View 1 (cartoon, protein in one colour):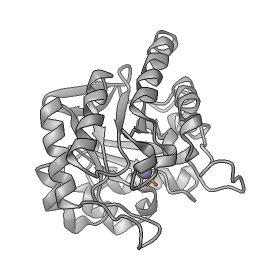
View 2 (cartoon, rainbow, N blue to C red; view 1 turned 120 degrees about the horizontal axis):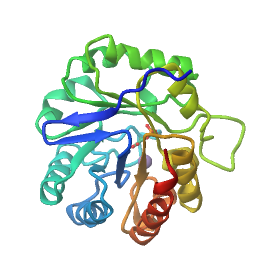
View 3 (cartoon, rainbow, N blue to C red; view 1 turned 90 degrees about the vertical axis):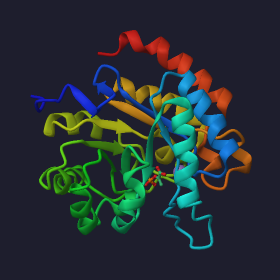
Length: 261
Ligand code: PEP
Ligand code: MN
């Protein structure tokens, strides 16, 4: 028996996203420049998505990799979101940054590396902002759901889970997309769950089929990386769709839409 699911995935004074609408998020891995973000925001809007993603504070594996434009990145996101009437989803890596995010960001993303940062989860529970909680790359479903409870039990009802792949022995993909987590979470929790086919596969050539598969498996939404010039991207170019490929994906998704429950 499925847990009693909420009909509304996420709600703002001016936008309600219901389960039947899906929570559709796209944008670059990192905010790199105004031109880059505006080019992607335009196609995100054209696709009918309501949410623009982009990392301003980047939790990189190597300290020598691009760490994000930080405050400047948030300013660029805000400008693009205002211009195209989109909501902003971006990762917060430190609860001390909350005042910076408060006026700019619509959805706080907690990345895979911080899913188990319980102190931070407690601090963000009281932020009053919806949270997109990504699954830790070594977290069991049970641990993922318990991490979410740090937010819900702390008073934050607007939590959306995101399956983004887990680490296994397989090296053909960056992580292993655990699509079975989607129907399992639905049995165990009333929280919505979306899928990130970009970080889980790490390969732009298979993002589209896995995104479609996620919807068929019952995902409440998707988060997809898109870059105007993936070869020049400062992070995750190899998994980012080009603008044209994203457009083609949206056509495929719309063809599938009438068959989704
Ligand atoms: C991201 O979505 O920008 C990101 C860093 O993903 P993850 O935390 O899943 O690695
Ligand atoms: Mn990325």
